[in-house]
Image (cartoon, rainbow, N blue to C red):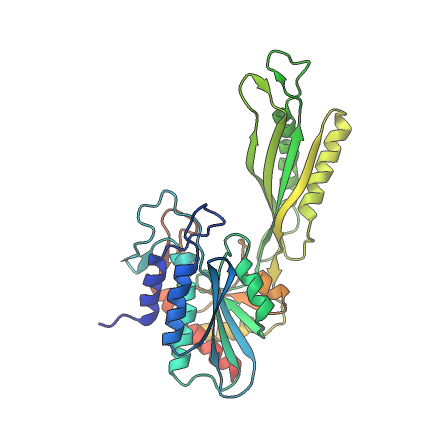
Length: 380
């Protein structure tokens, strides 16, 4: 029995180490997986462009041209993965009980294999009557989204589907995030001399209490119908030099998850308000905060026809998708901010960023077939 080309590609993609080097020092990055994708696109007869967006980190963009001018549809997925700590054989894909296991299988090489499989079928069959299909495999989504930023600087489309894992539902919204760093300042001194020392770690404890109260307030606001409430958590904390000394510095890094429409910088403002309150209570309290990085939430306009078009296509492939929101951030926000209305639609599985990750094999094929139907419907 001949293996389905989309599943052969999925196996090959998972077998390639594409851990993001911005997350793991010395990691391989996306160059090898990009070569395999480019080879796949050339073999399928697509026009292919490979462009480095950082040294050794290329986006691959392939195009299926229609027979006449018309609208452009984009399929987009990232090819980088998180690290593989505590995994035993992360790059040895294994199929068991209809699931393909390995790092990146679900997040999101299953979706990438589905969109490339759809492009292959469209190029080999009747093609597109009008318009064009743009298929983009991008780098760095797991860190700074350099790939998506470079993509929207060069390519335009009338709509896009990001094939992140959604269990074959249609995600029309997702959360954003903002990262903030707080530093409390003390005074170094010998541990036996409390009148000379100021404990920066104890002072950070005051801020942690206030952050907990803020998180509780955030989670009491009226929830978004698909995404729930905003939230925050303390992610990393460090401070001190040795047991016998008062610490003069303590640093805390936190993440604030945001809803679509919440303004940039809101997390920093909330933190600065907490620090100001702490200073009013204690004249010796000293702390500073700065924003590290952030990405906004995203929601497609409720009246946009793309979700209905994806629903029709999914139904033709045998599934009945719900409209959902995703708690995680995706490149759809970058596409949307660039004027490309986007939704998420991809296969299901489990183990995102976990030690045992898998994608449902049949979902990959169903997703591919739905994407084929969508492309034909969107461009006819």
